[in-house]
Image (spheres, rainbow, N blue to C red):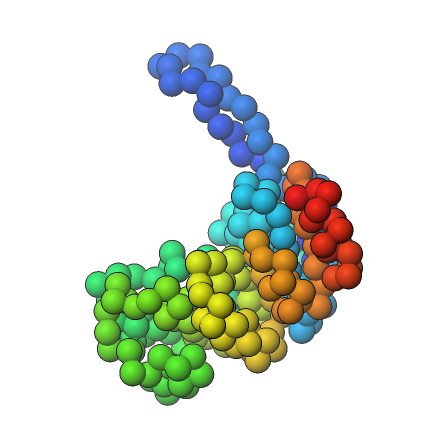
Length: 230
C-alpha cells in the first residue's frame, strides 16, 4: 500500500550570515531509505530527536518532496492519494481562537466531507469530546487536544494515518486512551514515538531510524537494541 524506493532527503543549512559568499552545509535527513507497508499494518518508528522521523512523515504525506527516490501509494502518486492520507503532527495543526467543533468543520469542508455535521458528532462521541466541542481549543487539556488533533486527522476517513508522537506529554490515562483509539481505527498507520512500550503495544512492525536509515527490529529485541544504540 505504501512503498518507498531509495528515498533520500537533504537540506541545506546556512553556516554564515554574510552578504557575499555564504557557506552552506548539506544535511542528509533521510538516506536511501526503502520501505514497504501493507494495508492494515501499524508501523512504529523510533529514534532520537533529529533522527528524521518527522521528515519521513512529511515526505509520505506530500508536505515535502524527496531529493531523490520515489514514494508510491496504492500504485500511484502521493498527489493522487492526498484524500486517502490523514496527518497528525502533534497539536500543531489545531487553530486556537476556534472551538473544537469549528476546527473539525474547517477541515471537513477542506476535504469536502459530505454530511460533515454527522461526521463531527460521530468523532466527538468516539473520542469523548462531545461536552467540550463548543469550547475554544486553548481551554482544552493536553489530552483533549491530542484527541481533537486525531479526530481532525481522520475527519475525511482516510485509509492511511501518519501520526507524529500522538501521546507526547500526555498522562498515562490519556496516553492509554489515545493508543486504544488508534488501534480501534484499524487503518494503515506510520507512527513515530519516543516510547518503547507504546511501540510494542501498538505496532505490527517496529523500526528505528538511525542516520536516516531504517533498521527493523523484532519487539523482543527492542530493549537490547535501545540499551546499546539509542
